[in-house]
Image (cartoon, rainbow, N blue to C red; front, side, top):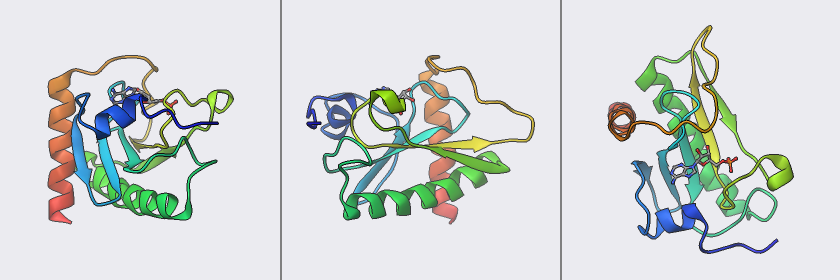
Length: 140
Ligand code: AMP
């Protein structure tokens, strides 16, 4: 399958669409999911193009996983979570909706189910949650 350079996340990378950015390094970008399934739900993406795990190269996978670990630790701290769920979907039949590789990180709390899909978050709440995560990253 071909990579579509006009997918939503490619546009976010090029700053053609807004996003609540949390963290970036040379190879990866992290931003808040606009329809979070949990408070502090972030997405980790590579800065270089690939559809998903099926066409990703080793560099894209390893840099994303390093950022997934870093952000998993940060959201645990920022939200006082008891654990994190990491999700990743491949192709339509695998549940993928945006065709630029991404990993979901969802902070989890005892007795709290994931929120239903498709509910847009308040922009100010996303910004406040991003700030909490940035603070946790700074504290280390
Ligand atoms: P999936 O491809 O199934 O992993 O789903 C795509 C995810 O991207 C969903 O969780 C959406 O809420 C999220 N999403 C879609 N558009 C945006 C956007 N503009 N900014 C942030 N997250 C988005």
